[in-house]
Length: 78
Image 1 (cartoon, rainbow, N blue to C red):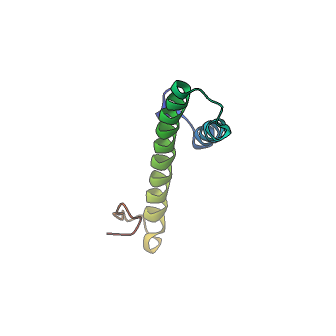
Image 2 (cartoon, rainbow, N blue to C red):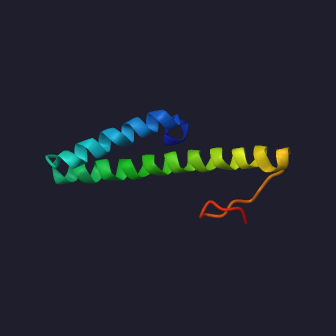
Image 3 (tube, rainbow, N blue to C red):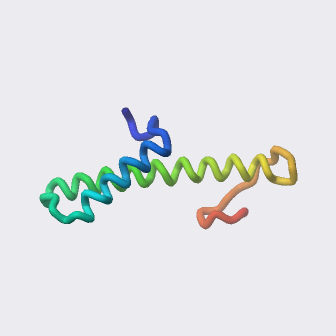
């Protein structure tokens, strides 16, 4: 399954498992690097899904109308 097809909760669970494994500190270096890379990919998936959801909510909530609102990288309206 490609990362883009992952549901948010599934991606978060996988990310939490990776963090748990890395925090234990007994993962061989090569595996730790692979886990870290996978974790970064999952983090981006989660971030993108949250950003998309925020944009949809802002659009729906803007003055009670479905008026698109441009959101900057800092999360504030442009």
